[in-house]
Length: 471
Ligand SMILES: C[S@@+](CC[C@H](N)C(=O)[O-])C[C@H]1O[C@@H](n2cnc3c(N)ncnc32)[C@H](O)[C@@H]1O
View 1 (tube, rainbow, N blue to C red):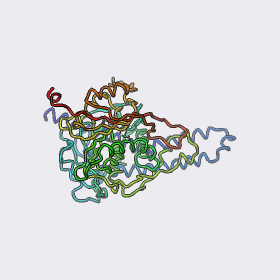
View 2 (tube, protein in one colour):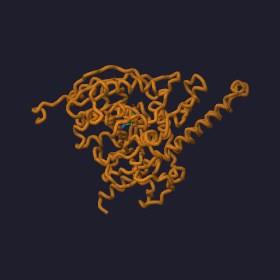
View 3 (cartoon, helix red, strand yellow):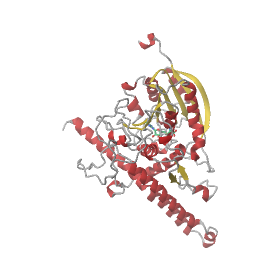
View 4 (cartoon, helix red, strand yellow):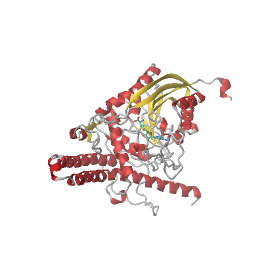
């Protein structure tokens, strides 16, 4: 066995390990939440009888919390069952040999779950137009999978991306979405099998809670206000900038850090070939479920706000259900070519093949996820065609700014002024700039709301003169 084979074996093993950890975090969600409820009960039992008597509903609320947790757990289980891992999860990490699959789903549809081993570099024709199944997620293995360890710490707007575990690396993992919806038709795993359940730190389970909040932001009626604050200005800007876009030749738009995919979907519906890029399995497991496996509007109910007793106006507010998705993605009117591509933005789009490929890049709450924001700007500039536009909305809450981990995490934290100056150096011209006040995954009924005064801009990549091109 040569060194390369050895390395890729090791990388794959690490990939499996980290995906198992993420799946375990999902699986541990309910137990961790139950533990919190135990704690509330223990505190209640420590009260003197006279105080207990004033709170006759307290234990009832705990029972209700338990019920909500189990409902959330049910949604999570469905999400996991719909998930088709892009790697062979049956591989025994110790021996390197394959174990028999734990269970195979019986509803096999033709064609949608072939493991044809196609490589999945972006822009390849192998980003095939599967039906709306995320099935292709499982099909795409990059033969040259490299491992990248994402180790940001949790200071960001989005806790779920702060994995401290490996996410996709440069293994691109893509699924196309089309209007032809279908039922899950790939082998599914019995995630409840003990071999899939590791004990993970609570911080991992917290990321699952973040995902639940992200569901509200992107896919619930309650998230509409936040979507109006963040996504609407971007969509209006795209509409203004491409007034003559044609259905037969739609402009292309890349959305790095696409989260749960709503913005990318809206851009697709606006008449763009839209591609979301996301490197967190936490996010991809959930976005694939919503985009590819929901059958109708408001199919699912979650209880997103149960995990905090703080700043509630009432128990009813805290325990309120939230239905999702507010729209049925498959019926939303997407433009052909809508896809989600898993992988680290830098690794996937830093590739030479991406140069000048995009008419527009949209970053929403993304640029501060960088270790090196200059690198992000450089890549955005490089992948845009001349005259292409970059629309950005977000704060500069640098994700790695507070990572006091043992590793010396690189984090270059620039002011807005510097970020813009760097963009100008990379050939951008500012066309529009303003500040947008917004929240991020906020509970609209909470007594505490964090507001961002986010930067919003449109920059255009200057058309280079011939002499510049030859420099
Ligand atoms: C703060 S969230 C914003 C998500 C979405 N744009 C929104 O507005 O809801 C940042 C997202 O970027 C993703 N992300 C962070 N670094 C990334 C990278 N290097 N490549 C791809 N995605 C990344 C995270 O996993 C997370 O989903």
